[in-house]
Image 1 (cartoon, helix red, strand yellow):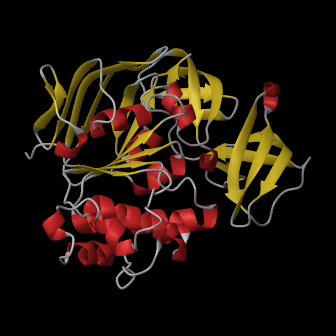
Image 2: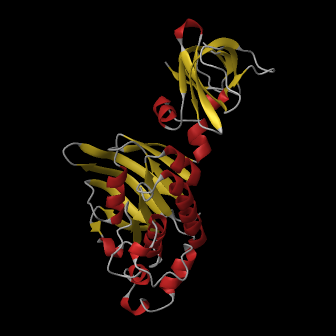
Image 3: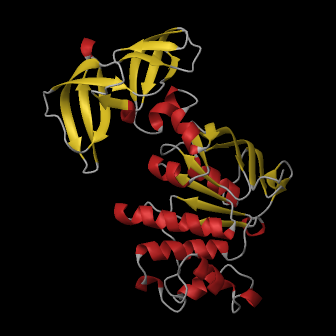
Length: 341
């Protein structure tokens, strides 16, 4: 088995209060790991420590199997072989695209083929003579990625690189950047608080909470088998209902459901909105009343009032939609996840 591109063990960091509290993280070689968590949970602080811009108070950091920070060893940023793509791209406005990309290369390589190679890799071949202000926001961000890739780093760190782009452009640029990283065989860490972004581009999603990684797994596992109720409610939309579990089944205001959990007694039942179906012919149903609806074109969200005062949200096709106040029947497709109440 190859060495991971990044291994972090027991890293601590405090400012006025603890930020990282013994964080562990592995980044497999050639993979993209998304650090997902709310603002202030320590994601960017970890990136700055890995890059060498901040010092940790305890723990160790290895990049490509080489200790770059730990007891008795602290390498400066320029010796860590880590590329960084900041939020705003941070291109030099007075340098051409070619010279921006060449900036991090050894002097003897700046006039060589490497800048054009990485510009072609990120889909910007032939644009080396342009100035940054002549490019779109998405192109500027790809130039920043090319600059990070140019020195052939062991690891690329991306700190919310798409946050400044408008929603329509963001999805396209992140797909292009992901394809560029994969084509380069690069290992990367992406910091984001955007769940959709993490789930759609990452090989591994590492959920950070209170300065620690609480779950690191492939996107489907994090979404479908969250480690705890906190992960479940943070990653994606959820319906959380009280229930009673026994022998692989659980009852809730939405009826009886299958579960893989061995828990018994009072539990919290987690259901995803897309699991709810209106009037399915092959599922047991409970009555509900539509109390609110939100139309998005391709789909819609329906807020449902359930028997006993509980509420749930169903994600359904955008047309046709029941009116607010309509009485409907609703069933739950597939097994549900439960946690201790």
